[in-house]
Image (tube, rainbow, N blue to C red; front, side, top):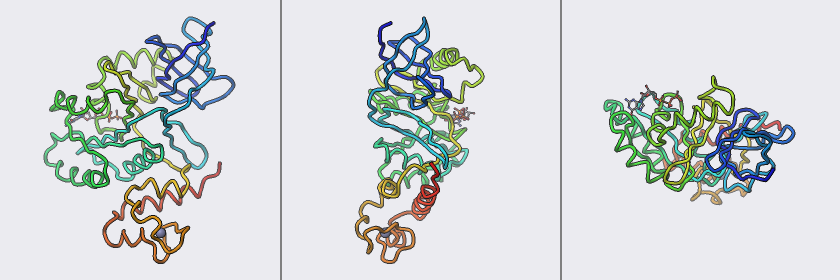
Length: 296
Ligand SMILES: Nc1nc2c(ncn2[C@@H]2O[C@H](COP(=O)(O)OP(=O)(O)OP(=O)(O)O)[C@@H](O)[C@H]2O)c(=O)[nH]1
Ligand SMILES: [Zn+2]
């Protein structure tokens, strides 16, 4: 049969779903390969009415992944924007926000924050203050309320999504699903189709999926993340992924300074002077520690 070109719109274990001009195909890789990610453009060989084999993956514009000591997991390919959804309640974890920002920086993807549930007014000042730390680093923060101001929320976010391939990530309960449902007409129908193709109806919320937007562009919804390991990043990548370190890199006494406990370290001095948030430096140190633990 002839070769088809598709986009991977869902992945679950070694099962994939591709969209070929609006048609949904169940896909598998050759052998035991698991190197395919949601968002990948793939060349397919159709093997039956609704099934195909992935023959080749097109070169990626970007690749987001996370990893632990033992293995890495592809999150999404060809993403151009990453949106971290946080909210006034439940309280969000700065650790996870910064990890997502580091992942975005190291993949060359522009990151934004969405502060949802602004209608919870008594908690808004504190959430705003916490989000402002990221705004001061250059990451735009968009305030929305999926529940109280759905239309306004769409007006704010839709222009940022047009023509882009955006991934939404967030801890459980921040309102990510509510936002995706506002932004993607018929998201529930798309999910049902994908679940049917994956043959895992019961796993509807546990896999990453891509929705094509009517006006061009796509949203990738990734399941709520509890942990975001970045063991695969080298120290060189890590120091560059903390954008606020940039003015100080090269200013340390030792050319191979790790900015952990070295004397006359320009980065540590900046932390001391209040120019780098201690919380961000602490995460940097934690990530350096993690990357030194990698076993693979
Ligand atoms: N007050 C308020 N509640 C909201 C808003 N948006 C969503 N919620 C509520 O927050 C809860 C979580 O929303 P979801 O959209 O399910 O959140 P999620 O981030 O997808 O969470 P998971 O499905 O656990 O990953 C629900 O009870 C929503 O009704 C908002 O703007 N304001
Ligand atoms: Zn240093």
